[in-house]
Image (cartoon, rainbow, N blue to C red):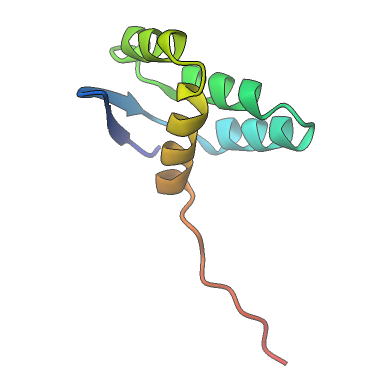
Length: 86
């Protein structure tokens, strides 16, 4: 399990994403519902101690879930350097 701590508006929020949660979010995005994917992913992998803080931040700012999701995914699944040899 990966532990990712983000500081959002001076509040530390801890996430513990799993491969299953990541896959579910990616599948939801492929179905065209990125906003729900971001929200559901974050709420499923946020630590219990950080859940209220995350809920407050996402309630006050409609775009917050998508921004936070992007930051968590960037840490959880960093880009790989891939090239094709011919």
